[in-house]
Amino acid sequence: MSITETEAINIKFENFIHTKENEDLFEKTYRVDKILKSGILTGNEALGMISLNKLSPIVKLKEKDGYCHDVIMLGSNSYLNIANHPKVIEASKKAVEKFGMGMGAVSNYAGICDLHKELEKKIAKFYNCEDAIVFPSGYGTNVGVISALCNSEDIIINDSANHASIYDGCQLSGAQIKVYPHGNMKYLERILDRIPGNISGRLIITDGVFSMDGDIARLDKITELAQKYKCKVMVDDAHGIGIVGKTGRGSAQFYNVQDKIDLNVGMLSKAPGGLGGYCAAKKEIIQYLRLYARTYFFSTAMPASVAGGLIEVFKLFEKDKAGRAELMQKTDYLKKKLLQAGFTLGNTQSAIIPVMIYDEKKLFKLYQELRIQGVYVNIVTYPATRRKECRLRLCVMKDLTYHQLDIAAQLIINKGKEYQII
Ligand SMILES: Cc1ncc(COP(=O)(O)O)c(C=O)c1O
Image 1 (cartoon, rainbow, N blue to C red):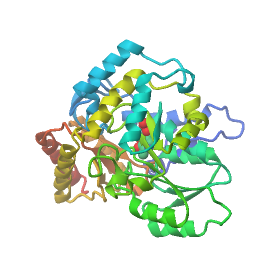
Image 2 (cartoon, rainbow, N blue to C red):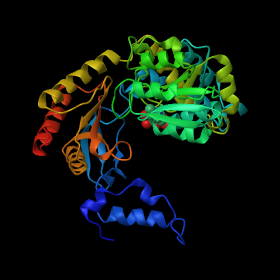
Image 3 (cartoon, protein in one colour):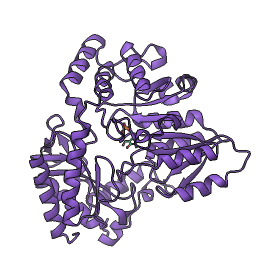
Image 4 (cartoon, protein in one colour):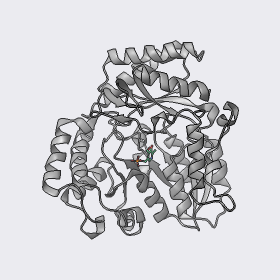
C-alpha cells in the first residue's frame, strides 16, 4: 500500500474499526499493519519501547531496534515518584510475603484482606466521606461507578475533555449523554436549563485536573449550577489527588467545595504510584456500588502488595509529606523557562505542562528527536485532542533536579527554534 503524507495526516482512528462487507473480522488489523509498515505514519516507535530500570528522573530505555540509552523522564504520571518511597516499598514487600502475588478472587468472594479494608478507610477519611470502595483498575472505576448508578431514565452531562473511561461508562449506562465544550460554564448552564422536568436522575461528571491540559475544572461554578438544577456531581480527580489543593486533597479542595461533591472518584495509578481506582461517598452509595458496579463485582481484587503500599502513600498524603510543594516549585520553574522562550502552555494549574505545537508532522519529529537526544516526553494528538491542537505533554517529577530540568528545557527550546514553533 502506498499513501501520501497528506493522506496519512487525514487518517482517522474510525477508518479501521469497521468490518467492511464480505471482509474477514481481522482484516482491519492487517490494514493497520500495512499503514504502519509504510513508514509514513510516524509516532508508533513508542510501540515496543521498554524501560530497563525502575522509575526515576533518569530512565534507561530500550528502543524497538534494541538501542539502549538514558533519558530525562518527563513523561510519567507518577509525579511524586512515591512508588519508590522506602516506606511504600517496605509495606508492599511485607504484604507480598504475607499474601502472595495475587488475591485469586473477586472482592465480594473473599478476594480481599485487611489491607484492602484499611486502604478504603484511609481514602474515606482523606475525603471526609462515610465510606470508599477500591477497584482493581482505574479505567474500570469510572466504567463501574457510572454504569451502576445511571440508566436509560437518567441524563449525564460531561465536559468534552473528560477521560475516555468516563465516556465509556456513560455509553454502557444507556443514559442520555450531553457534552459541553471544555470548561464552558455558560454552555453547561444552557444544557441544564433545557433538561425536561421529568428527568430527575441528573449527573454532572468532570475530570478534576484535565489530563491533557493540566487545568482544573471550575468546581466552584459546577457545584453551584448542580445545586440550582438539582444534579449530582462526580469528579474524577486522577491527576489532582495528592497534588492540588491547599493540603493536596485535590481539585475540590482547590475550590473549597469538598462537601459539595457527591462522588469523589480518583485513580491510584498516578500520584499515588500504584494501580486501581476508588470512589468515596455516602455509605449507602458505596454499599450499592459493591453490589452493582460490575467492574468491581466481576473482577479480581487488587494484589495485597499494591494495597499495602498504597496505605503508606495515604499516610504520607494525610500529613502532606509526599513532596507536593517541591513538585509544584519545580513545575513552576520549568513552566517559566518554556514561557520565557515563547511557547504556549495553555492554562495549566498542575504538574502537567502542555507545550502546544499545532503541527502534527513537527510534533512527531520533535518527540522522536527529543527522546533520542535524551529527553522523554509524551505527545498528544488525535484522537485524544484535535490534530491542530496537538502538543507535547510534559509531566514533572518531584525527584528531577533543577540541573536536569535546565537540560530538558534547553533541548526543548532548541528544538522549538529549529522547527520554528517559537
Ligand atoms: C482522568 C483519568 N481517569 C481515568 C484514568 C484511567 O486510570 P488507569 O490508567 O489507572 O486505568 C486515567 C488514566 O489515564 C485518567 O487520566
